[in-house]
Length: 173
Image (cartoon, rainbow, N blue to C red):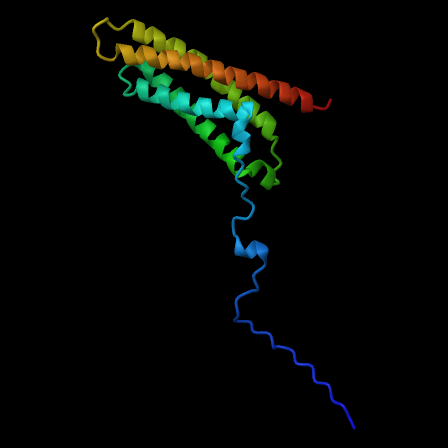
């Protein structure tokens, strides 16, 4: 008796969708939600910068005086920068990308610039708000914005100090 073996192979179908692997099932598989970062000191500082930025913007707006315009500019730009850094850490973008970016130095420079700008802005804000007459309806909120600007400058300054220590520790000469 003769035995016949038949191997059947499926013909390739070029119109069929490509086979889905594990990465194809999840198009955003590179995103890793990292909530634990916000339980650390740098993460808590970013949250504090975010909340204090909201307070500074809400108390100083609307800007009727030139000093308050600058204060709001600094508060908004710093807020946007902090929001971007929160997104970078929350989504794990630092670890997921291969961009030739020195993330630590970039964050250090950004935070240092925000610190310096906040120091200038809160001084200017307090000068402008102290020159308003005592019965002016915006005086209280303008002074409060300046005080929260002081607190935010201290928070940014402490974050800059921590980033400086970390950057100095990872630097190779």
